Image (tube, rainbow, N blue to C red; front, side, top):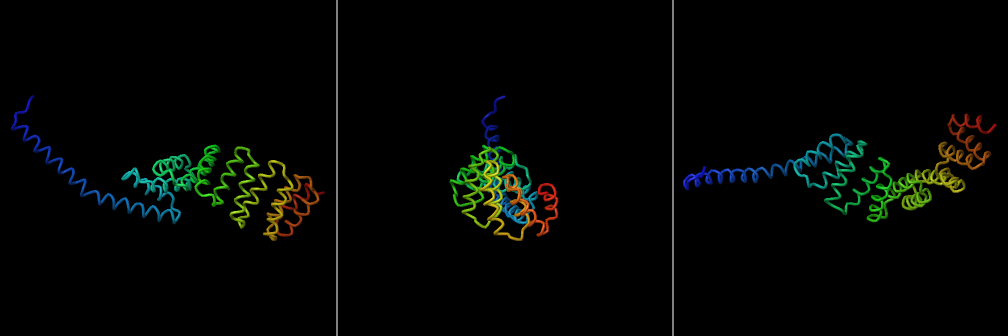
Length: 250
């Protein structure tokens, strides 16, 4: 049915008022939405700092319902999910964060770690390569890339990365253990023992260092050296060391 001119005028007058009302509501509610988004982000950060990762995940998810282009919300929800071991969701969030900001080195790093936990070693390698190019001075980047290389059975490459990590942070003794383990996989017993020699010199009263060195010496055929290390570990309080002595040294 066609409208006459008068009815047409009334129709557009009513529609025009509705449009004005909608625009007015949007304009007046936008500051409130922005304020809510800001408050949720603040609470999410506070929950991250207090290690309330479940709460942080919820807060940043609510932010994204209000603003799906908030790159910080994607990144921080991804971090919360990674800490909650929700690795597939973390990968998705870091991917969205990188789509919005391809220069985010930390997003590459954390996505790489999440992929590593999912045993996606090639994906982890790719992400960690990007992270290292963006920041070649962070020892953690090399540590996790070394783990990805171990997953791909590239143990020599892993040794190189652990060596770089140690150069950047010589005080992190875990890198020595990790490098020694990588060297064991290529039967570099001499190199592995040297790593544990350094660890023992740094922690002369830690029986775990002697125990680890004993196992490496035994695998390398140095039975006498292994037994002496187990003996020292026993002196320092490792009661399990005497079981190793009874089994392998007599």
